[in-house]
Picture 1 (tube, rainbow, N blue to C red):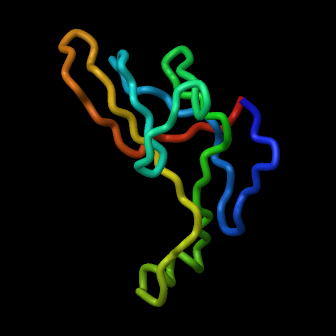
Picture 2: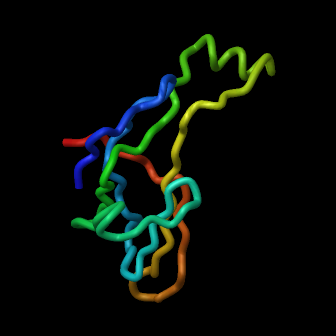
Length: 108
C-alpha cells in the first residue's frame, strides 16, 4: 500500500492514513472518501478497529487570516479537503449505521 508519486496540493496537508472505526462497528463495512466508495484491498485495509488508507487523506490548511476572511465573507475556500465516511452494522443489533467525517489520525 504505497503512495509513490503522490503529491499534496498547495494549501493542503497530508493528515494521515488512519481513521478509527466507530465503537461496535462490524462487517460489512463500506468506506467512502468524499462520498466515493473505496475498494477494500486497493484503497484501504481494515486493521484492529481502524481503517488504513493506501495514501494519506488530505485536509485543508486554514490559517488565522484565511479563517477571518471566510468568516467576513470576503471569499471562500477551494482547497483539497477530504472527508471519511463509513457505513457499518452495529454489533448486537445488526442495525445499519453511518458515521460521517471520521477523524483522521497521523501515521505512527
